[in-house]
Structure formats: structure tokens, C-alpha cells
Length: 156
Image 1 (cartoon, rainbow, N blue to C red):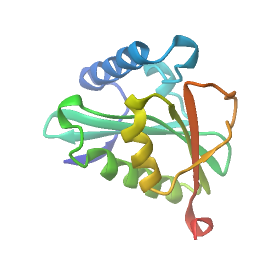
Image 2 (image 1 turned 180 degrees about the horizontal axis):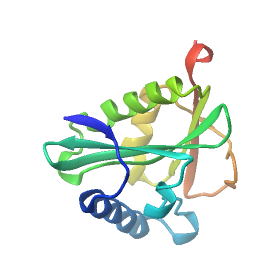
Image 3 (image 1 turned 90 degrees about the horizontal axis):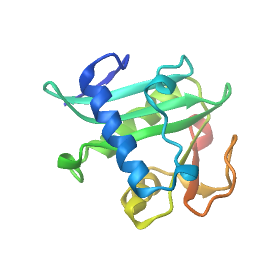
Image 4 (image 1 turned 180 degrees about the vertical axis):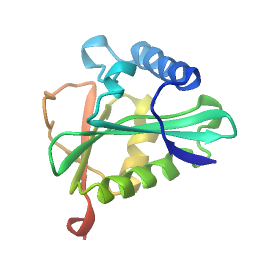
């Protein structure tokens, strides 16, 4: 398995992300869906990684720059056939390290409050994320929870 920066030009990642958006739409009301589409993920303020196993995309994740010190974790997903195999934990560790390398001192995220998202919330907790108030342009939403963690020396 390898984690690579992805320019999002391949059909495999486009299909993988389309499945992600479809699943989020089936679980989360439209007004509470914050997943970025392919075009939004191609913006210069986003760095996107794919987890490859041979030629197969088995996971992905991104960070979106909010300002010089704060980034948001976006589009974390593991293939449904590879859930609970350590891919998400490995990828999240990689993204945290890369965010620190890029000079960010805080990494935040929004995820669902539904039981479907409980494994994701536990993963984030395991990696040092704590619950927080909405950040950036988010507003309180019963379908969302917000988490954040310091990076670098501030992480202690």
C-alpha cells in the first residue's frame, strides 16, 4: 500500500469519490452535507491523497487550507471492502504529519453525528482530536459534530 498526492485526474479516483458523495447523500440531509465535489477538491488550497493498493484506490483524504495556520480535514474515506483494516488510521497519521510539515498548527474537521459516523469519530479521538464549536463558515447543526487538534510543538 502507498499513499500518494493525487491530481484527481484518473477515472478510478473520480468513481471512488462519486461513491462517497452518493453514500453521504443517502445518510445526511442535503443541507448538512459538506463533502467537497471533484472540482472543489482540485482547488489550489486543497491537497488530496489517495491510498493505493496496486492499481486500486482503497482510501482517500484531503486537507483544505483555511488560513496560514489552520487546515480542515476533508474527504476521509476507506473503501467499503477494506473497512477496519487500518487504512484510515495510517492515512490520518500521514495527513497529520503532512499538515505539520506544511506549517499548520491546527487541524479541524466536521463529521456526522449519526451512529454511522461513530467509527470515524473514534478514529479521530484516537488521533488526538477533541470536540469543538463550529469553525470557519460552519454553523451549529444537529447532524454535524466538529473536532480539532493542535499540531507541531503546540500539540505538546
